[in-house]
Structures are given as structure tokens and as C-alpha cells.
Image 1 (cartoon, rainbow, N blue to C red):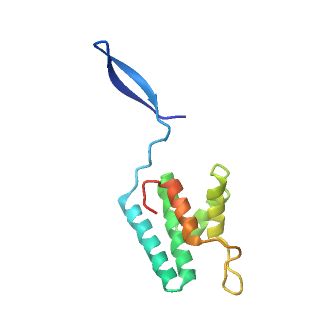
Image 2: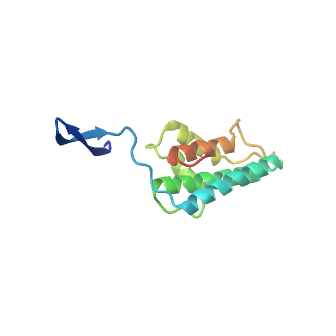
Image 3: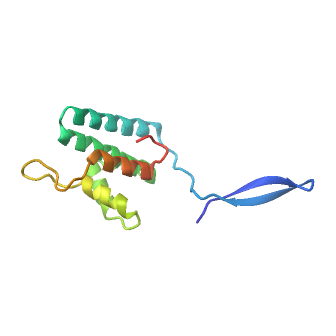
Length: 138
């Protein structure tokens, strides 16, 4: 259901209320601590990647995405971002690209310590963050 606002306009000297539909629903109120946590986890992911520690970068990206899902949905964050993202990957109410990003973030590494496919954990996390919290820089 679209969000409706009422704006008063003066028409021929009388005030009239006109309904206007907004195309975007109102953004969820974001706890400032959640925004700081998401930004910190993304920064740690970038630092880990630059240091050559792709495993640590994946963990941090996954945590940032988990926080964004919880904050965007207005629910308490689960103790484990992995579980949060597994649920998101199976949520048919979410767009396919978001479910796919969540699935990529929950992939298990191979015995050679590599990710199957060509998924980029930081890019996947940023997609999820932008979807749930477009007002947060990702």
C-alpha cells in the first residue's frame, strides 16, 4: 500500500487538501549505533582485503550485511549474521538479486580455501546494505 501524505494548497482563496502519493515508502528509522557498526564492519572488511586476508574480509562483510538486514527490517539482530543471511537467501518476498547476494555470503569455502564461483563478498554485502538501508553509504 503506498504511503499517502496530505499537503494543503491554496486554490481560489480557499485551502484545499490534496492527496499525493509517494513512490517510495518512508525509510526505516536507523539506530545510529547500527549505522556505526555497519560502517566499521565494512571498513574492517576493506582493511582485511588490502592486507590479503580474504577470509576475514568475508566475515566482516557478512556481519555488516547481517546488521543491515536487521536494522532495515526493524528486528533485533540475530547473534549470528550467517543465520540471518541464510534466512534472507530463502525469503521469497525479497528480490532475486538480494537472495542471491545473501546466498553468496553464506557459501562455504572449498578445501583449497577458495570461494566457489566468482562472488565478491564486499560487493554482495553492499548490495544488501543498499537494499535495506539506502540512506547508509555502502
